[in-house]
Length: 307
Ligand SMILES: Nc1ncnc2c1ncn2[C@@H]1O[C@H](COP(=O)(O)OP(=O)(O)OP(=O)(O)O)[C@@H](O)[C@H]1O
Image (cartoon, rainbow, N blue to C red; front, side, top):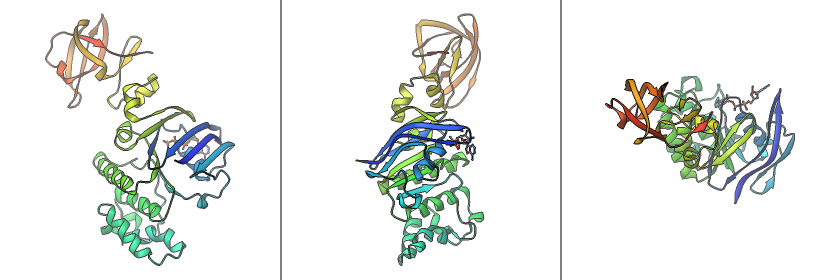
């Protein structure tokens, strides 16, 4: 069963046109939206949430058409990019807010339970938002949105602006929580590594439209365009003349083209970066680490795109 179904949805803000977009989230599925800055990811979430009026199309949640329903009646949990915490409330009251609006008598117990499930948040319940570290702000926003009943949770770039260590910690806390909740999730991500770690399926967007959808590994293994390949290549891509390929697409092969390295150095634990000549052309390649210490090597490029 589909928790969310978006059909032919289009919208506009300023001069920017979104859509038409088709997208769905199955029950219990974690769907990622990934694309360059300004491609319309936030606008899509806002249109689904009813915070932005659609120009055409429909939004269905649990088989109910909610296209013209008020945002607070859609049963959505929405964790905004900037968290949108109330600055005049401490962490406890921020999380309790949606429950106090509904005059829920078990609000305190529910807040303690949810905070206890989100590593370390219980220690910050009496702090003001401005006193919270970035990771705890995000967990507070997450707790506030998920403490009440909802059909679908939408998160807008939850790992943005976190340093790498916190980012990885947050990723595993949020993933664990999402899996434990078993809820349907639409999450904007800006890093393919996050998509690999968290999403069952991803939609790749550019300039207001969806270019591709599939599991992160499918997309990584078989990018259907240079744009998608580049977006999913955290290690960058190599370019030689009219061809582009990834470090892992290089195979050592004595039937291949001869590559004469002039300078090689470590790039990371898995790759080295080499300047040299390939077919008489000056190139810079990122090569698998096994290539180290070779004066001259034969490489074969297993897949490539013409530029
Ligand atoms: N209030 C606004 N007025 C005019 N244009 C806007 C407004 N808000 C957003 N836009 C434009 O709409 C486009 C889509 O913005 P959106 O925030 O949805 O992109 P995004 O993919 O979420 O980007 P990012 O990853 O940087 O958050 C952008 O080109 C942006 O400049």
